[in-house]
Image (tube, rainbow, N blue to C red; front, side, top):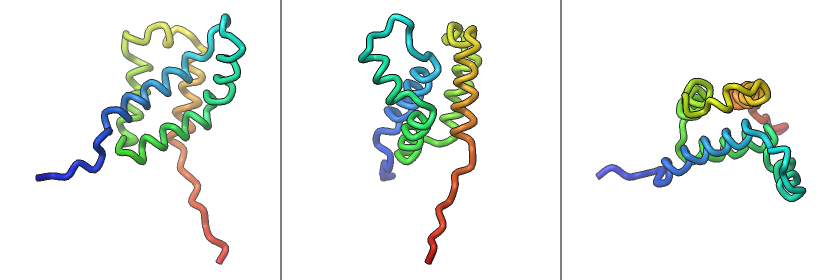
Length: 109
């Protein structure tokens, strides 16, 4: 019997997609002050990248993350996001942040 090291991998893949879509969509002009405050706090490039890194630690591969980005960029399901230049700009920025090489902390001792 093969052990299941990442029992919730499917959930994490879906979470990656939701995080990316939420960041790329942006905030609506009619958003309440609460929604604006939450968007400002939790929907920055760095916080989205942190959430995606968390999902990668729980079994999602970098290929799956990049497949989600490709899917958003080319799939007919996301036509409204593909038409908006601001959304594509945010998607490029997030893709650059995710695929950038990570700094390795060196110890001073």
